[in-house]
Image 1 (spheres, rainbow, N blue to C red):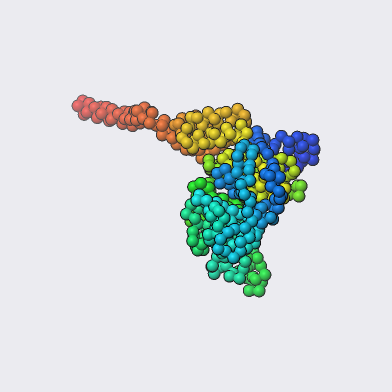
Image 2 (cartoon, one colour):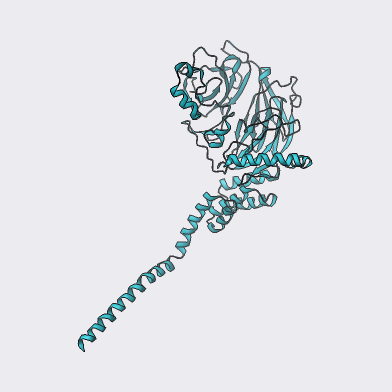
Length: 500
């Protein structure tokens, strides 16, 4: 059914574009930010974010331009950029709303290590203690440094029976937990994330994606010869593209490049939330899965579903996925409902040529473009701040204030589904169940409607228990009394007959 909706939607959008080119141009200008309603229709939305500034190396005061930068890491007011093509890391401090100052750039490390120069660094993470972890891909290692860039530890190719000991270790992305354990993605390793203990010991793989396969190929393999099976494609898990660790220690992992049918059927996920056991615990209570755009039409050299290449998680549990296929950002709440969609491919501010990484600084978003060699800073608009305010007030237990904030959101966008649902949830927590049901019904939120209805029914029964008991007693006692009266009358009549 969803495939049919996508197809019809794509055909309709194409027809409109062909029939009214001028109208299409206006829609692009007007619909930078959009959302999807219950029916899967695209709904224009007030801009959730605005472009504060687009920075290049010269804007940061650097003498050397960036070259194919691949990733970023934000720690408090510090931002670290892996300038991969220049074999260096750039560390900057945010000193104002739009101001960044370079703290240092480094392309080498100090201390007791044979290889002191960085080679193609692809990712970086900084612990609470200030230790720096770098995916030194060109040198086939992950290095741990102190805050003064002194060498502390090295993480090497996993020692495991499933990993060829002769292969080259190519770590591409990593995260570090509060205990100093390292989780990394490495090229040619698709068993999940490589997990290392704080002392550098490899301790296994976690969070491998479910294996998907075609039933026809599976059955054919059962009857094929050994030589034929060797020539066929193996059924293996999909490798991750990027990882992010939130403030609670959960790992969000992107698995881009999934097959359209697997995404549509739910057999594969574009983004996962892994606990310590490597199990996916991402909540998806939205009407549609968290895989970006619903319509996958072809045009402008782009086709297929969204390709999530990175993800960042705000402190209010809103997670934002970066689509490198069409250069868009997709925000989801902790229930998997779409909060915003915006962006695109192009050379204008707010558009991208090859988006590679996304980070956040409080509510602000920072996006790294590896082809344009630029960094774009997005700041929430009034509409965006109101939505965040409503969500955070609800999380803090200020349900009445949250409902008021959602009503302010509705004044700016009367079609915003989350506003109705947000008001309903705030009323539900205030035990105004019947009012909450009305808001949930407006946006077809069956799950929350059922919760509100269950509580409303219980409340109604408690308030009318005396009447209910009285009615039950009357319904039971009246027929019983009538029957008893008839029985007594019958006995009297018989007694009179025998007396006469």
